[in-house]
Image (cartoon, rainbow, N blue to C red):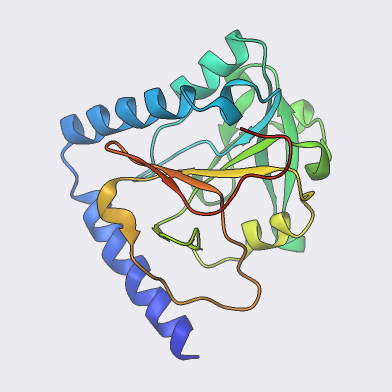
Length: 200
Protein backbone atom coordinates (compact mmCIF):
# COMPACT_ATOMS: atom_id res chain seq x y z
CA UNK A 1 0.00 0.00 0.00
CA UNK A 2 2.86 2.38 0.80
CA UNK A 3 4.29 2.12 -2.73
CA UNK A 4 0.83 2.79 -4.14
CA UNK A 5 0.55 6.02 -2.14
CA UNK A 6 4.05 7.07 -3.22
CA UNK A 7 3.20 6.44 -6.88
CA UNK A 8 0.02 8.48 -6.62
CA UNK A 9 1.91 11.41 -5.12
CA UNK A 10 4.43 11.18 -7.98
CA UNK A 11 1.60 11.11 -10.53
CA UNK A 12 0.06 14.27 -9.16
CA UNK A 13 3.41 16.09 -9.04
CA UNK A 14 4.32 15.10 -12.59
CA UNK A 15 0.91 16.06 -13.97
CA UNK A 16 1.29 19.46 -12.36
CA UNK A 17 4.77 20.01 -13.74
CA UNK A 18 3.90 18.77 -17.24
CA UNK A 19 0.79 20.96 -17.38
CA UNK A 20 2.88 23.98 -16.37
CA UNK A 21 5.55 23.39 -19.02
CA UNK A 22 5.73 26.40 -21.39
CA UNK A 23 4.65 25.41 -24.93
CA UNK A 24 7.94 26.57 -26.50
CA UNK A 25 9.98 24.55 -24.00
CA UNK A 26 7.79 21.49 -24.54
CA UNK A 27 8.07 21.81 -28.32
CA UNK A 28 11.86 22.18 -28.27
CA UNK A 29 12.29 19.32 -25.78
CA UNK A 30 10.08 17.07 -27.88
CA UNK A 31 12.10 17.75 -31.04
CA UNK A 32 15.35 16.98 -29.21
CA UNK A 33 13.94 13.72 -27.85
CA UNK A 34 12.67 12.64 -31.25
CA UNK A 35 16.00 13.42 -32.91
CA UNK A 36 17.83 11.40 -30.26
CA UNK A 37 15.34 8.51 -30.58
CA UNK A 38 15.60 8.41 -34.37
CA UNK A 39 19.38 8.18 -34.03
CA UNK A 40 19.20 5.02 -31.90
CA UNK A 41 20.13 1.90 -33.85
CA UNK A 42 17.48 -0.19 -32.10
CA UNK A 43 14.80 2.23 -33.31
CA UNK A 44 16.30 2.96 -36.72
CA UNK A 45 16.45 -0.73 -37.66
CA UNK A 46 13.14 -1.71 -36.04
CA UNK A 47 10.43 -2.62 -38.52
CA UNK A 48 7.41 -3.19 -36.26
CA UNK A 49 6.96 -0.31 -33.82
CA UNK A 50 4.14 0.40 -31.39
CA UNK A 51 3.80 4.00 -30.18
CA UNK A 52 1.23 5.70 -28.01
CA UNK A 53 -0.49 8.78 -29.43
CA UNK A 54 0.20 11.61 -27.00
CA UNK A 55 -2.70 13.79 -25.79
CA UNK A 56 -3.17 16.51 -23.17
CA UNK A 57 0.07 16.98 -21.21
CA UNK A 58 1.79 14.00 -22.89
CA UNK A 59 4.47 14.38 -25.54
CA UNK A 60 2.89 14.83 -28.98
CA UNK A 61 4.08 11.76 -30.86
CA UNK A 62 2.05 12.43 -34.03
CA UNK A 63 5.00 13.89 -36.01
CA UNK A 64 7.17 10.95 -34.96
CA UNK A 65 4.50 8.48 -36.08
CA UNK A 66 4.05 10.31 -39.39
CA UNK A 67 7.77 10.13 -40.14
CA UNK A 68 7.90 6.45 -39.17
CA UNK A 69 5.02 5.65 -41.52
CA UNK A 70 6.70 7.61 -44.31
CA UNK A 71 9.91 5.66 -43.70
CA UNK A 72 8.07 2.38 -44.21
CA UNK A 73 7.90 1.18 -40.63
CA UNK A 74 4.92 -0.96 -39.59
CA UNK A 75 3.32 1.21 -36.92
CA UNK A 76 0.82 0.07 -34.32
CA UNK A 77 -1.04 2.11 -31.73
CA UNK A 78 -3.03 1.16 -28.61
CA UNK A 79 -6.80 0.83 -28.43
CA UNK A 80 -8.45 0.62 -25.00
CA UNK A 81 -10.69 -2.37 -24.39
CA UNK A 82 -12.30 -0.74 -21.38
CA UNK A 83 -14.49 -3.64 -20.26
CA UNK A 84 -11.45 -5.94 -20.22
CA UNK A 85 -9.10 -3.25 -18.84
CA UNK A 86 -6.47 -4.06 -21.42
CA UNK A 87 -4.97 -2.66 -24.62
CA UNK A 88 -5.48 -3.97 -28.11
CA UNK A 89 -2.50 -3.40 -30.40
CA UNK A 90 -3.79 -2.16 -33.76
CA UNK A 91 -1.84 -1.56 -36.97
CA UNK A 92 -2.07 2.03 -38.18
CA UNK A 93 -1.76 3.04 -41.83
CA UNK A 94 -2.54 6.76 -41.54
CA UNK A 95 -3.00 9.29 -38.73
CA UNK A 96 -6.36 10.17 -40.30
CA UNK A 97 -7.69 6.85 -39.01
CA UNK A 98 -7.61 8.17 -35.43
CA UNK A 99 -10.48 9.70 -33.46
CA UNK A 100 -11.12 10.69 -29.84
CA UNK A 101 -11.97 7.63 -27.79
CA UNK A 102 -11.82 6.49 -24.20
CA UNK A 103 -10.68 9.22 -21.77
CA UNK A 104 -10.03 11.59 -24.69
CA UNK A 105 -7.35 9.34 -26.17
CA UNK A 106 -6.68 9.31 -29.90
CA UNK A 107 -7.48 5.76 -31.05
CA UNK A 108 -8.27 4.01 -34.33
CA UNK A 109 -11.89 4.19 -35.42
CA UNK A 110 -13.62 0.80 -34.97
CA UNK A 111 -13.62 0.21 -38.74
CA UNK A 112 -9.84 0.84 -38.80
CA UNK A 113 -8.95 -1.71 -36.11
CA UNK A 114 -6.37 -4.23 -37.30
CA UNK A 115 -5.28 -6.39 -34.33
CA UNK A 116 -1.55 -7.06 -34.20
CA UNK A 117 0.17 -9.57 -31.93
CA UNK A 118 2.21 -7.88 -29.17
CA UNK A 119 4.80 -10.65 -29.31
CA UNK A 120 5.64 -9.63 -32.90
CA UNK A 121 6.66 -6.06 -32.02
CA UNK A 122 10.30 -5.03 -32.35
CA UNK A 123 9.95 -1.82 -30.32
CA UNK A 124 7.34 -0.29 -28.03
CA UNK A 125 7.47 3.40 -27.15
CA UNK A 126 5.73 3.59 -23.79
CA UNK A 127 4.02 6.55 -22.14
CA UNK A 128 4.67 7.38 -18.51
CA UNK A 129 4.55 10.14 -15.95
CA UNK A 130 7.84 9.25 -14.28
CA UNK A 131 10.78 6.91 -14.85
CA UNK A 132 13.86 5.91 -12.91
CA UNK A 133 17.44 5.05 -13.81
CA UNK A 134 16.67 1.32 -13.51
CA UNK A 135 13.96 1.58 -16.16
CA UNK A 136 10.89 1.43 -13.94
CA UNK A 137 7.97 3.69 -14.74
CA UNK A 138 4.91 5.23 -13.14
CA UNK A 139 1.97 5.44 -15.52
CA UNK A 140 -1.57 6.68 -15.11
CA UNK A 141 -2.38 3.88 -12.70
CA UNK A 142 -4.87 1.86 -14.75
CA UNK A 143 -2.50 -1.06 -15.33
CA UNK A 144 -3.24 -1.21 -19.06
CA UNK A 145 0.40 -1.17 -20.12
CA UNK A 146 1.42 -3.57 -17.34
CA UNK A 147 -1.00 -6.11 -18.79
CA UNK A 148 0.24 -5.44 -22.33
CA UNK A 149 3.88 -5.95 -21.36
CA UNK A 150 2.99 -9.36 -19.93
CA UNK A 151 2.14 -10.37 -23.54
CA UNK A 152 5.30 -8.99 -25.12
CA UNK A 153 8.11 -11.28 -26.18
CA UNK A 154 11.59 -11.21 -24.62
CA UNK A 155 13.17 -9.65 -27.73
CA UNK A 156 10.98 -6.53 -27.81
CA UNK A 157 12.83 -3.31 -27.00
CA UNK A 158 11.00 -1.02 -24.56
CA UNK A 159 11.68 2.71 -24.95
CA UNK A 160 10.28 5.90 -23.43
CA UNK A 161 10.44 9.62 -24.14
CA UNK A 162 10.62 11.89 -21.09
CA UNK A 163 11.66 15.34 -19.99
CA UNK A 164 14.65 15.35 -17.67
CA UNK A 165 12.56 16.30 -14.63
CA UNK A 166 10.48 13.13 -15.13
CA UNK A 167 13.49 10.93 -14.39
CA UNK A 168 14.05 9.91 -10.76
CA UNK A 169 17.01 8.08 -9.29
CA UNK A 170 14.65 5.42 -7.93
CA UNK A 171 10.89 4.88 -7.97
CA UNK A 172 8.75 2.59 -5.81
CA UNK A 173 8.51 -0.79 -7.53
CA UNK A 174 5.83 -3.46 -7.35
CA UNK A 175 6.06 -7.13 -8.34
CA UNK A 176 4.23 -6.66 -11.67
CA UNK A 177 6.45 -3.77 -12.84
CA UNK A 178 8.67 -4.48 -15.84
CA UNK A 179 11.66 -2.22 -16.52
CA UNK A 180 12.25 -0.63 -19.90
CA UNK A 181 15.55 -0.60 -21.78
CA UNK A 182 16.13 3.06 -22.69
CA UNK A 183 14.80 6.47 -21.63
CA UNK A 184 15.31 9.28 -24.13
CA UNK A 185 15.30 12.82 -22.73
CA UNK A 186 16.18 16.12 -24.43
CA UNK A 187 19.70 15.95 -22.99
CA UNK A 188 20.64 12.26 -22.86
CA UNK A 189 19.82 8.63 -23.56
CA UNK A 190 19.67 6.58 -20.36
CA UNK A 191 20.67 2.93 -20.75
CA UNK A 192 18.63 1.26 -18.03
CA UNK A 193 19.37 -2.36 -18.87
CA UNK A 194 20.98 -4.35 -21.69
CA UNK A 195 19.05 -4.65 -24.93
CA UNK A 196 17.69 -8.09 -25.88
CA UNK A 197 20.00 -10.36 -27.92
CA UNK A 198 20.38 -9.28 -31.54
CA UNK A 199 19.97 -5.53 -30.88
CA UNK A 200 22.68 -2.88 -30.83
